[in-house]
Amino acid sequence: MSKVSGAYRVLKSYIRFWTEKVYYEETFVEGIENIPSDGTPVMIASNHQNSMNDALGILLAINDRKPNFIVRADVFGISAGFGKFLRAIGLLPAYRLNYEGSAALSANAATFKVSEEALISGETVVIFPEGGHAEGHWLNIFKGGMAKMAFEAAALAGFEKDIKIVPACNHYSSYHGLRGRQLVRFAEPISLSKYYDLYRTKPRTAAREVAAELRAKIESMMLDVKDKEFYDELEFIRCGQIGDDFASGRGIDSSDFSGRLESDKVLVNKFLSARRSENPYFRVINSEEGQTRNELSFLQRKEQKAAAVADGAEEMPATPVEELLLETRQLLKTYDSHHLEERQFRERPTLFGLVLQLAALAVLAPMALVCLWPSALCWFLPLHFAKKAKGDMFEGTFVLAMNILAIIPLAAILTFIVASLKFTVLFAAILVLVLPHVLLFEWKYFKTAKEAISDCRYFRLSKNVRQDIASDRIVLFAKLTEFLKK
Image 1 (cartoon, one colour):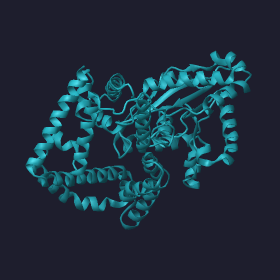
Image 2 (image 1 turned 90 degrees about the vertical axis):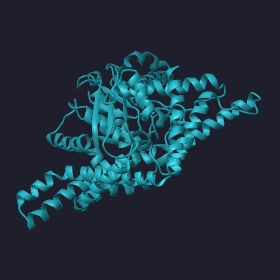
Image 3 (image 1 turned 90 degrees about the horizontal axis):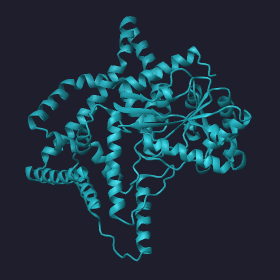
Image 4 (image 1 turned 180 degrees about the horizontal axis):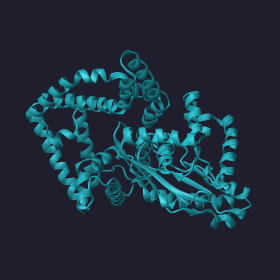
């Protein structure tokens, strides 16, 4: 059984506060009752869409044990201190051929051994079968390490212990910025013992069947956008007014994040079903870790064209649903060319409101200037490093990890020392206690300032241009609404 020390509980409480109270606006956990009691060999297998944030979501959802995590090895190389921090919260490195090279693969033996021994001793091991995270709301191809580890652990115990594999998924309202929402779900466990007889004679077949059952359960819980060609357009539709109205029509309140996920799944699948029925050459491709949306979109179009050519089709005119999605793409291009936002056509800002907003920003500017310490370090420094990382899904990792590990403790210590010397110890303590509010104020201030700048651009456009865009939007949204009613 896992031993949870007092120091680990304190560290976890510290991580929980900054993650759930500051970084996210809301966090939700479902199906925690599906995780067997501590002392049962449990492997949690989750989708992977948001780098270290996925691991933190599962870590914070589990309260009565210290799970061991198998995660991509490259995150351990960010710094020596960060690597020690990851190991302290139970993360272990998994080396991959395409990233760390064949020479590093031998190091996996130590990780797998520790994990297998932890499993048979009744502890919990968390693994991400995709290997690396996806670049959006979809599920990549599973690697073979998950099933291999589970069966080897069972063999180590003489196949006398039943290892439970709990499917899990993480879901996010956004991968970028602060104050988003996160949902962690756990499904009913898969009993590995039912595959033991098959494994003894056909180990590869057993591994494939376990992976297939696991994948089906994870897919059923998450939003898996299979159409990468129109991924951005589908995101715009489901996350905006159309998605809100669709959910409302199904009796789902906007505050119900779990219900909204289920509504979004139905919405996205309506478009997928229509493309499949209307376009005989439409293809869904299997995605690998590291592939971007643009790469997958290109490959999907390439396979579709190849299928059409093989069938002797010289042209592939857009189908009705594709016309809708292409019109949505054109609207997004119009927004982008004018530096506009969907918010401005949904909420319709007024000049009077903009003037009030600018006045409030001016009044609060001195406070925002004071709050640049330590906000500039906490929010903007991590983003600088995140932009240099491979893949834009590392933003949350940098913002959370750098703050939790170094920036926030350092800022709190320096603030306390300077304030103690200049004022009083009590005043210094109060300043440290209000640091979370300082950071959130600064984030909201800059977010509001960005919106005000965007609204200034909106009003710089001629009234006729704004009306034309608004009219095109109304026509498109009416078509989308009619389509979703079918």
